[in-house]
Amino acid sequence: MENDTAAPQGSFASRIGALDPQQADALPLSAATLDELAERIATTATVIGIGESTRFSRETFGVRDQLFHRLVRRHGFRALAIQDSAGVAARLDRYVQGGKGSAESALDGAWRPWRTAEMAATLEWIRAFNRDHPHDPGRIFGVKPVQAQPEDYDAVLDHVRESAPGGGGVPPGADPDRSPHG
Image (tube, rainbow, N blue to C red; front, side):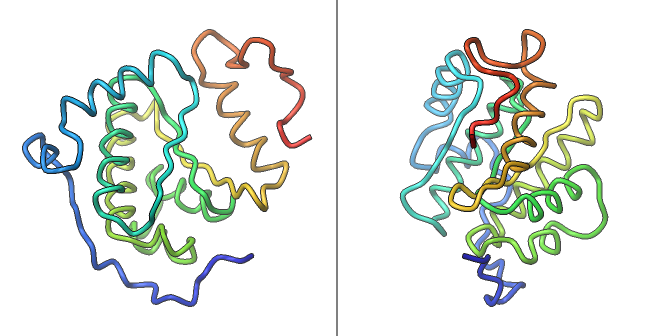
């Protein structure tokens, strides 16, 4: 299955923008609840998956985005894996690393659920974070579970090996020379 690129590329109608603490309380979860959730997750996990039961929901994206911000700022997480191809993610990663263009143009050709104002705002946030943390930047990786290729898994594993706390980054009991795809 290919990305749905037939949808209008400029359709970034919804906008939650950057949330300040007062606006964060307007989300389904309060800022205090999100802080507690991020703390609980971060103390027990090295890789976190945040999914959704629906797409194109401002509230779902807002909660996920605020949780991501907390995990990056307060708990040292630096990678965002999205459900898209490695090529699309590489284009998004180039943008957040200071590449040319706009967040919207970086999202051209991305899977349609990512082509939103909320995702553009997330890219802008990561880009700003990276400007402030040039030696500890956030990265974006693509993984399409149904179509994942060995290089998709290898890119994520290489990042974890390089950046995970404790040196080497390979979880206890894991085979460092074996990718999860086989």
